[in-house]
Image 1: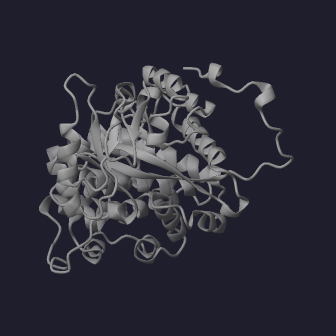
Image 2 (image 1 turned 135 degrees about the vertical axis):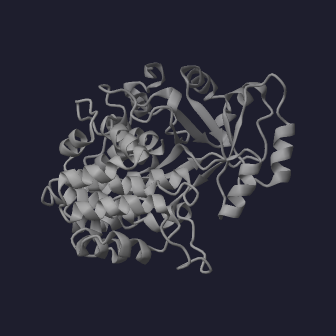
Length: 431
């Protein structure tokens, strides 16, 4: 895909300033969930490392698109997120940014206002981009465009909080034979509102702390680990005690489902062992005790499907990998697996529907891991705090990264690599 014929001529380009504003920043996103709370896409954002530098919106958008394209579409392994969609907010100035060429058009939806979608000047460009596969989400509009050609460009429609009356009115305005339009709620405040949108078959963008369901005070302390989780906890305790391999193998052999999931995991693209594994002893030998502990933490997190949603499981996997990758090379090799467990276990109470203290009493993680999970302190805590900031709005990302001697490029590389890794691993752990 090329936009060369849309590029300005040299005489139209203003002279470049002697010193360009700093456009470095941190990738953030909101997750797009379908009615079953599965992750269908991400609305990408960019938090400047130093807002005082005053870089304009166009420069910041280009930095975001370049970063995402570099790490998720490097041309060697193809698009790293499969069929997952990425949403980008664009304006008159950024709709023709050459950096969009770095992204696969069929996986990108551009979020625009009515002024863009109805612009006669931009119409040829928008039609060309739609032909290339780009989608367009119309935002902040009360209705679809009246102009028939402009309406055909719209693939997604922002329906705000998804009020039933508004949704019914918008659906009534869809004409037979027109291309389908996916409704997306962007202003949902709680899970009750989410369920109301789900009942109308509307996808929802959720972000920040809205991604972590609140725990009911009535339920806190009243739940315990399920039997299937206890078997996993037993294995985790055996590994932490460095029990004999034959004893670990014996426990695994008593659980056919656990054995199957272990073999599926080690043979998955996310692990990439390069050797097909058939026996338990071979699997444990290939993995090693520390990576096996990491895998068991993933399995524990997915052991109570009734308590957790698919998106929360994916979020925990992503966070574990993100925290691990940021610490790689900065801490001793053995700490990398601890970092993964820190990230995973920071959401374990929500995943299992069990109070955090109850989980930690059963699993008995080392003190440094517990300190990070409970207070975001110690050797591992700052890495977890940085990951959480990037998942939200990135407001504290720059200061936290500086305290860890990490630059924005390394943090973003780890974040997007984790996004791709979670994409590969999630189907494996779900089986």
